[in-house]
Length: 474
Ligand code: ADP
Ligand code: MG
Image (tube, rainbow, N blue to C red):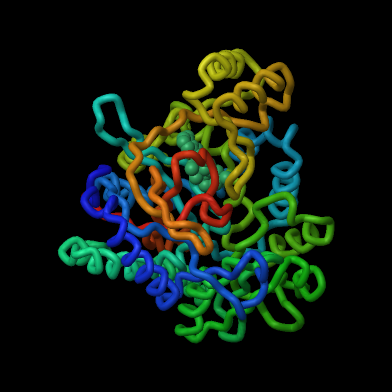
């Protein structure tokens, strides 16, 4: 996998020239982020970090990841509708994890009131790494599935053009022509537009629920603009705005200062830090409403690490997707080893194994957004400390995936140009729409390749660790 650009990677002059072209091309193409200094203004912007060279990805694994995406859409949707499964699966977690418990409380509250929402929209991204086995063949292994605020579908719709140009500058026109087109922004907008249409009110808007700090606004604008192109109005609001301006009418239609909202697309709301009491109240208002939430709170819960771990248990997929043996086989083929740390013998045994051999595992809390997982010595220390306490159940254990590194340059504003040993993570965007019980749209919507230097165990693009990339199929 590593050998694709061996000849150019060490040619300092060629790399420097190509990097200068690459950065300008990224700016021209709109691969942009606001700066850390001015995260809420577009007066000064910079390019989003990206690799100089596309990374080699085994074609068979890439195709496998696409082929299983509709199955994962189906599975997430099934989990979100299975109250018994969610209750059982999260029972131990919510005893010790306040954030998941609070989300769960809202979930139960809206179910008990009766759902006003009848149209459901899922936008997810299933992430994978390529595990390098003993015989040197790579296998596709799912890292996680993101069911809320899966980002970079917009910016990555523009990165392939940049890499195509870079390859040409480096004398590789033939390879440049092989880079695949990729437009998740369009695919995600298609799903939002479908949900908006089924909601059935021409006047109603799509509301992007956005962060207080909006560095990644251009990623979102790519999707917004696709909606405007379809003559669908888009507004950007924060939880705070919902608290101040939001209301429900008698049939629980959602209004923001008198403006009806058809779809709420969350790009916020997945970390505990954003929720003060007002924002929890705003979240509850949204969930109670008839508006199409992307995702609804059940689907957010379906994306927890605990659910992921339980899905890998023998027999669970068969219960959740009866009559879909082929989908189940495709899904299971992507699973890495996942282990419950619930109290009891099973948990005791795996905790002891991980303490003895921490480099085999990753310890994961119920958190999203990167930078929360524990590895190596730290994993051992934490597990030693909590192994006899209920706190243990707020984590899961996962086999550590070990990809084959490749050389590349990570282009980042204000950073020196230097070669790094890198590994990549492939994400496939999924989008589906359900009306009542009927799935009316179920698609893979494009891909995202993120690459990071091997010295970082954790962290995505937003966390400042990984950068945008384009797959070069080999
Ligand atoms: P988050 O919700 O924080 O994004 P992830 O499960 O995606 O959590 O983990 C964050 C990062 O940690 C991943 O992008 C990947 O780089 C690394 N990682 C996660 N799980 C594994 C694993 N099993 N093996 C190797 N690296 C992993
Ligand atoms: Mg992740």
